[in-house]
Amino acid sequence: GFRNSVCFARFSEARHFFGALLIACRTLQRQVLALFPEEAPRIQALLLAFCYSLKHQLRRSDARADLQRLLGEDADWVLSRRSPTNMLHLQLSHWLADQRRQGKISDLVWSNIDESLNQLAAVLGGCERLASMPVPFAYGLLLHRTVYLFCTLLPFALAPDLHYMTPLVSMFISYTFLSLDTLAEELEMPFGYQNNHLPMDAICANIEISLREMAGEEETLPTPLRPDAYYRLT
Image (cartoon, rainbow, N blue to C red; front, side, top):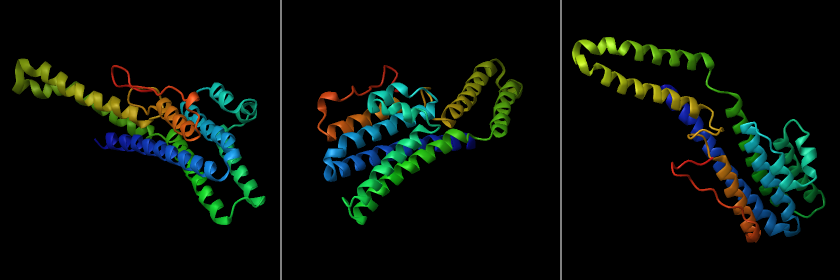
């Protein structure tokens, strides 16, 4: 029970990070559209590239197709870095600093936009922490072996009282413990493709829909992802 609580807390924290990512992207898009409408397409592309790059970084998949679609030729330089997502965040920071140096925004406006950029940095750092620091292996191994030992010895403890019902009850109890153990393993690292992992494809598509709709680009909206027959999203 303790391990399942810890693993679900990791899943819940990852879900909150992606919720914060959606909020930060919408906030930055709104601020840029209001203050620098001529810069909005570039910043929107960087924000979307940040989201998709983060998704691929956490899943350890190839981000080239998504970044080339969003950034064009600039994607090659970003992809050549060891941390493409962090480089995209740095480009957003450089853009904001340029606006301040040119006197286009006041210190107060700069501070407000920089706070939104700080939220992106917090999301990136938090997700990297979850992805790189699983539950200690020795702890998980001990519980895994304990579950199997318990399920093996369970019939011998139940047989004197349940007699011919022992196999059925043992299977039911063992199924529950083994399922909880497997579920904890899936929730421990919530950024993959399993049924109980975060639907990051759907989240990134939703962010793209939000930003493009805010910019009046209804004709280029991606198709929103829907759950399949088993209510699964990727």
